[in-house]
Length: 137
Image 1 (cartoon, rainbow, N blue to C red):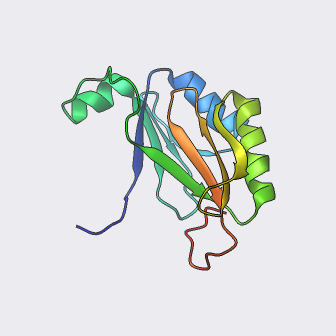
Image 2: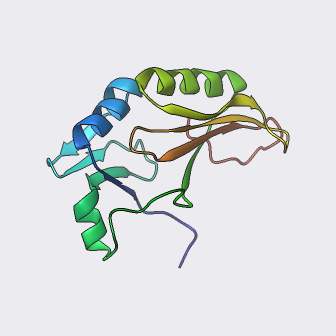
């Protein structure tokens, strides 16, 4: 198995709220909306898709009522500290909860962390020292 993600599937409890956060708040474009699932335009990256949480949990035979930190963090690497600040502000305005405000990181980079309305954690980051980073934009 290769170290590659073919798509990211997020189980959401409130589909309408999740769609509003990502489309109206963060500017994502919907490719297909099937009601119980939503596929977003990926711009050539790993596609992100929402599924009703109960249904997705059923597909993988697990309990949909997980609690606490899931151990999953979605990382978004950008090309400047200013982009980190802009995206953090955009997410906050859209209803995200700031977990760690944008600022200098212990390893020398710059970043911040927020949770979307469903509780999924996003880590934004920038580092001037890396030349082969997987930039999201």
